[in-house]
Length: 138
Image 1 (tube, helix red, strand yellow):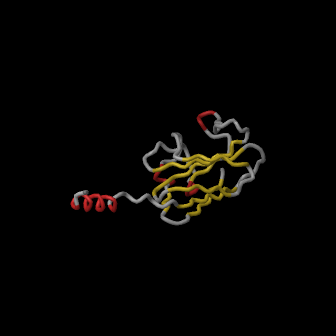
Image 2 (cartoon, one colour):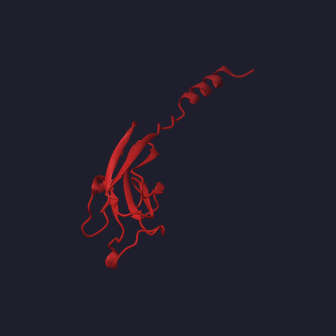
Image 3 (cartoon, helix red, strand yellow):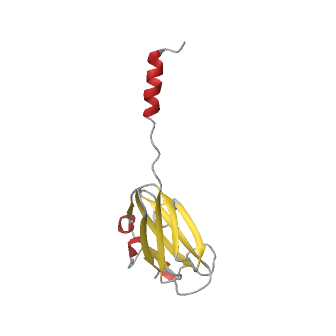
């Protein structure tokens, strides 16, 4: 026969399990796609990750005619980097001094002057509901 105290402890512990966070939908509207061909590449970074050149938390590749991209995320702080991979080689092509050749953009529509932006400049907060942002490509 099971000990009643043990049963009570087990019941109590079952209530203390962490509840998984509800997923939210982050929808990114991509604007200013001027050329046709290639793909649009979207990278989502969570706070603490190397942004924008590190490995993203999530990445999505869509056709060049996509107007919106949706990602399922937990509530938190994120930053988004997008570029139009016009020649579909899987990388952001750059000119001399590292200046991008292909159209790109960041959350909060940050327009970097001399270097890649910092996470804090591009961060957005996703809460337990839907969030929509717009990014215009340069």
